[in-house]
Length: 368
Image 1 (cartoon, one colour):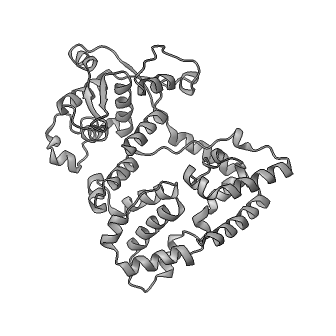
Image 2 (tube, rainbow, N blue to C red; image 1 turned 90 degrees about the horizontal axis):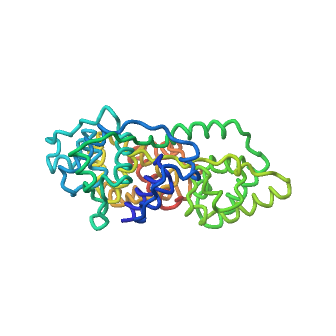
Image 3 (cartoon, rainbow, N blue to C red; image 1 turned 30 degrees about the horizontal axis):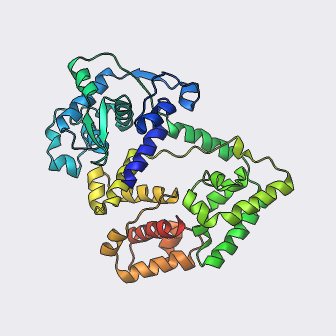
């Protein structure tokens, strides 16, 4: 259920439709105006497109699945993805299998979100989000009419623009050195490596944006609200004092980092880990090699996402190797650099894969 709530939140963030309509619909109410005139999507209108044919294809598939499958499976079928579920239920034999591949995954998530929002499709709470075609959806299939849909936000494009803003801004070197000294003191006090508290890139961004509250701190790269609350108090106090003493106008009120979008692959990875699937099986189901899967998990854990791969590590990495690597990352390493870790264990019976797995586990448990 927790994962389903996360996916619902992502739907709200990604959607290009009226925010008021989306919120009211989520709680079982309706908003019938085309434009509320207040939310970001209505004030700066998102591009529209003709969604008639796409909606017909989507609803036809959902109708054939008889209300037994969730959104991710529907998208996998449309994309022609070979997953354990598509193979188990022989859905590669469906006429819709792979028929939407040319449009791309993001497109189908966009259409699916709006099919639910506009009541062509319903989500079953009791069945953890299983999709079922509604009466309105059945009527549309029987007697199609033109349907205009709204494009989703392209947060990847926005993130690139924000990254350019941050790269062009110079960090406050005096504050940066103060933050590094504070990090060293905090790390020593709680007995962890400094990078576990906050990574260098996070401190550098703090020295540009001057976050003075927990809410502002979580906009910094690699900092979640949980991490902000765990380690952030002395940092925001230091920054607040510095800003007041130096009479600085914090730029966070003008330049706010947009939360990075979660690609569907990352969501799939988190869902599979939540179900404690074997990592090799996850890679196979996503049609990627194991190195790519490790890279996805490294990206997630570096951005502050917490997840547990202990079930896989305990089965595939010997206990003494786990202990050696964990001790290295906790007590020896001065950064989370993989190259440094490889060099530290060069000549020992430790594989690069084991180093990467233990680094992911360590960062998720200790840093997030």
